[in-house]
Length: 270
Image (cartoon, rainbow, N blue to C red; front, side, top):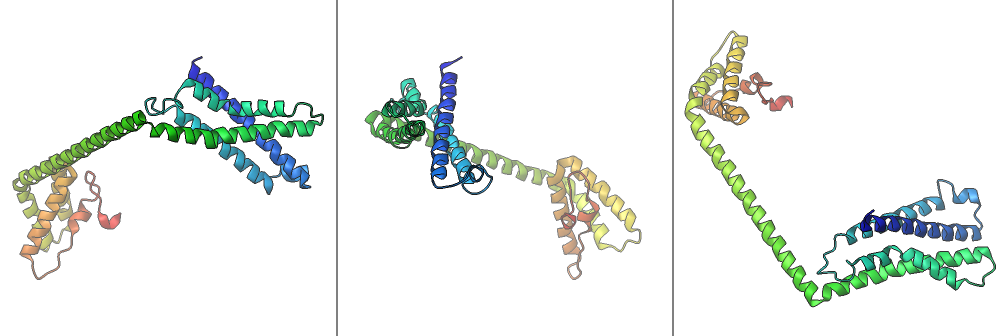
């Protein structure tokens, strides 16, 4: 088993010990306040706070433990070392040991266990909440750490800028390609647009026949250039219809006729 896995197991065990001590203190406090056991362990009242506190402390400890493995040694010369990580994860055990030594000579079991739990709580709070953040802050203030951090952030900014420029170039290439496609399709789609415009602006008795012809044209446009080509053909058709029938309302039957052709979907039916 690797050293990091051992540290993780110890971290889990120390966190479980810390949670157990917190639970002991809370239960003892509730008992001294006159609460019965069935109230303490019910699914309402103080037991909800008890469970929430345990879960929060556990997630906090796991988060700190995982985040510690991501520290950069140059910026954190002390807290990134294995010795400090061991000290960090065994802090609850050290607190329990300190509490045990402090309660030597105590004959009452309840007082003895309370001393161990309080020692665990105070030591863990001191290490995890006070010493660790302060130590990390002091590390960041070191000249070498500050210099490395500034250089790292500068590299990150340069990398982010390059990625943004790459995305802009890619977008420009896509837009340019679409513009080229529109110019190339303009001549090819012109006869189809005139045919569709004729179907829309003339009085056709056989509406089914007009729909069938329009669907065939839509399939051809889909095969030429997909949905973008179909959209361009539809726009060309509507422009021609407006030029031919300026005084009459043109109903966009094309969108309805093409519904289901390729990936075309009629917006009014969506």
